[in-house]
Length: 144
Image 1: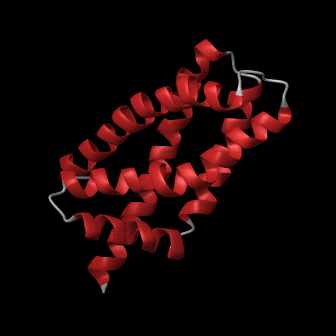
Image 2: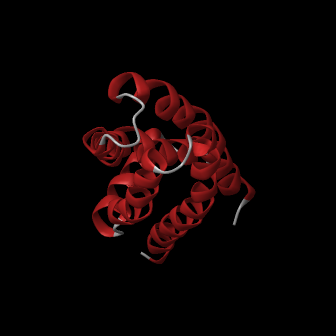
């Protein structure tokens, strides 16, 4: 693992998954969906939004854009890698497998004051999985 690659995941984990998601989940979602943990329609809406539009348009591309920026690559290279991982490396299925259950627990069981800590804990493992997906994609490029 190169120091630049490690830096890109550190930045993604702290800036996006830490700061941005704290704001999204603890400030925007309560305004949009309310704060009830027993309104299962609202919980479903939160999880669905996070796993679809937010994941596809913000959460996942941000990781690839940050990595491309840190590695001094073009934005289009980062987005191309993102698209390849979506199509060929089951990125979205792996994301859903981790984050579907995690977000459901987050919005129903985890007290608000511990949500960021819980998500940060799970994010550690998600970053390991994401790093493996990216490494597999990069390995495929070098052997071509």
